Structure formats: structure tokens, C-alpha cells
Amino acid sequence: MRITLESDYALRIVTELARADAMLDAKTLSVNTQVTQRFTLKILHKLVQGDIVMSYKGARGGYKLKRSADEITLKNVIELIDGPIEIVRCLGSSEVCSLNTDKTMCLYHQIFDRISFEVSAKLGSITISDVINKSYKL
Image 1 (cartoon, helix red, strand yellow):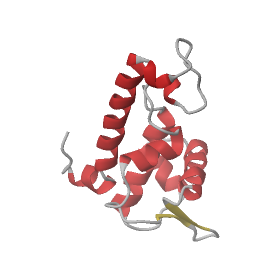
Image 2 (image 1 turned 30 degrees about the vertical axis):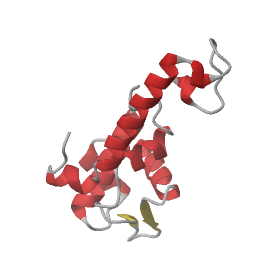
Image 3 (image 1 turned 180 degrees about the vertical axis):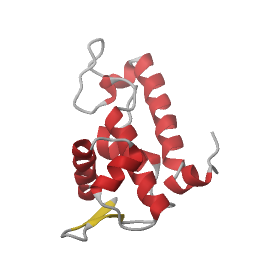
């Protein structure tokens, strides 16, 4: 499993908004995170739709976190952009295992399901505030 570049950028954008603790425009976010403005706007749209960021319209508009940084986890942001954390595709509910129709009978399914759960739980335990304060535990 690899976290996509879009999720990486989304984490940068959310972290920048948390550090600023103020409304920032897309251009400023783009410059500060080194993400192109076009991609920044695309990601901001998803973050607004996902209730992580608020958007303010107009000449003095911009973006601000909708919740505090200690309420937003890495998992929240990653899953909003990339979907559920599953290290193999057969973990998805609509996917069919090519070896077994009953996924619970596949030994690898059980192993990968447990690993995915642990990765998800760890990402769910680290907040944006933890990252900013370097107070997370690995």
C-alpha cells in the first residue's frame, strides 16, 4: 500500500492551515506547501466536501480548518482522499477473491486484514496537532 501523492499534499495543506490557525487563501497555501495552485484547489475542494476545511468566498475569502488540529487524524485526511486503508484490493467489500469465494477462508486475507486494521488504527491515533508538536508515538 502506498499513500498517494494527493494524500501527501492534503496532509501538507491541512498541517499548514493548522499552523497558521487563521484563514489562508489558496495561493498562499500553494506557495507554503509547494503544491501547484491547481492541485491545491482540487484538494481543498475535497477537504471542504469532507468537512475538514471551511471555505470562505469573496475577495477576502480563503480556507480555514473546520475542526481543531487535535480532532483531525492522519487517517481522516488519507481516507477522505484515498478511501479505506486496505493493503490489498481483495479487502474491499465488492472485490472477489480469485482463490476463494469465502474471503474468511483465505489465510492471506486474514493476515492482510489485520495489518490493514493496525495501520488504520495507528494513523487514527495521530492527529495533525501531534505532527505539528512532534508528540506522536510510532
